[in-house]
Length: 339
Ligand code: CUA
Image (cartoon, rainbow, N blue to C red; front, top):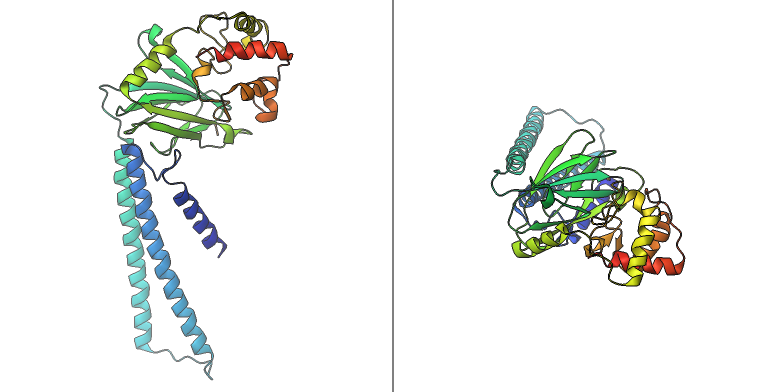
């Protein structure tokens, strides 16, 4: 009975999250659409089987009770009854095998559609490296000056298939954007690939889907699907070096950044900061969230994150960095200017 209620809860939850920015039941592209069809087929089939089994079970229990209230405990074996029972058993076994075979066949064709590599022409290739607990993103290009590096927020053009080359720097993670495709594991030393295509613009939430340590639940990312023009202008902006400080406080913030522990781990192109241990901050202010989808990217949250990120995401690699309030304001002015 407990299994029944927990399954029901899972199904109700899945249905309630349909049409959301993180739902496998609200596909925004062809691969997720194949998976959605498989999901619904399995849902309807197994629900029907469950219903039939419950009806037959209730019927049998009722008959058993009626029989046990009669005077005699002795139930004579009748050949006709025996034959009927074996026909029912054989029929059920055949039906079960046929249903399972049907589901397997459908699943096989869905697998083929989802896992056959898209043709090479016009593909956009993005390299994603999983870290505890954030995503390093690099847009591959044969010309080094055309490579974009960013973190946790992946912009893609609508209608174009994007190939992701996946790797991990530490433990096993899993790349999953439910609205766009299924899961692919990121295994250290074992490069993997997945692909997806968004057919309508939107922001689709992705989530690490393999338990990878303390902050696994705070390892989210976003796929921002936009028109080709919007994508182009975003890309052109990301290619640029960080904007120079425009005000005295921004300048002071930059000097603080470059003279404090920040510079050991983070990179800002166009400055001396070249750290690769933590997220690249060249255009940090252009992103919508910080800490891998954990906090909105605004001044207050950025301040509390810098002051003591361990309170927000315990176990992450960034140590608390004490700044007095003047210094903090200058640093925030500078970071928020990095559009
Ligand atoms: Cu990375 Cu879970």
